[in-house]
Amino acid sequence: MNNKPDIREKALRFGLGYPLDYELVMLILGAGNRQMSVEAMSKKIVEVLDSSNNDDMVERLLKMKGIGQSKALAVAAAIELGKRRTCHLGAHIKSPSDVIPFVNHYAMNGKEHFLAVTLNGGHNIIQIHVVSIGTTNSAFAHPREVFYEAIKENATAVIVCHNHPSGTVEPSEEDIYCTKKLVEASEIIGIPLLDHIIIDCSSYFSFMESGLLKKLQLPDG
Image (tube, rainbow, N blue to C red):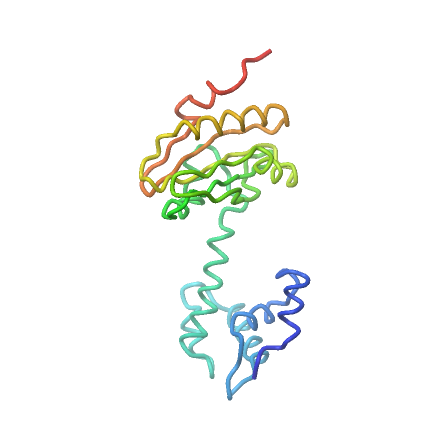
């Protein structure tokens, strides 16, 4: 039996926060089988998920009648992907190294990704935004794109980050110029830029730790 046609329509119209848990599973599975409709199967899967731990989830799903490896792994993979994409929420940032675990998967990308990490008053992560995607050696971000998200989320501070596919984390002249513009904008807007971090697969460069960020700030008064 095919997926309920209105589930996709509702998700597209109202967003993925609208469907119930079993309806989200229906979207993952797409279809049931001869033994069970996709709706009945999805409801049973949610029952299993509600009573499973991470280490036995797949095993328990495979014990369900009509659930094969492909469907069990599809559900488990969707849950794991969701965890990876939201594990940063609320994380407390005390130093540049605290940001790295939440952005290091971008280090393997062949194009530069410029990210804005918005923080609340306690320096907990509100969200990580992809501000721009560039080429293999450039991903310039305009201040309005960075601080638009910060203003929208009532952030009290921002950390920006981008990857260097070239394999070196030393900042380019363009990186320094971009950071200077972001610092100037942050001082006008009143949302501090705490750091600009450049990452590759094995290391990182912090404008704050190197003292370069302070040099780019306007003198007091």
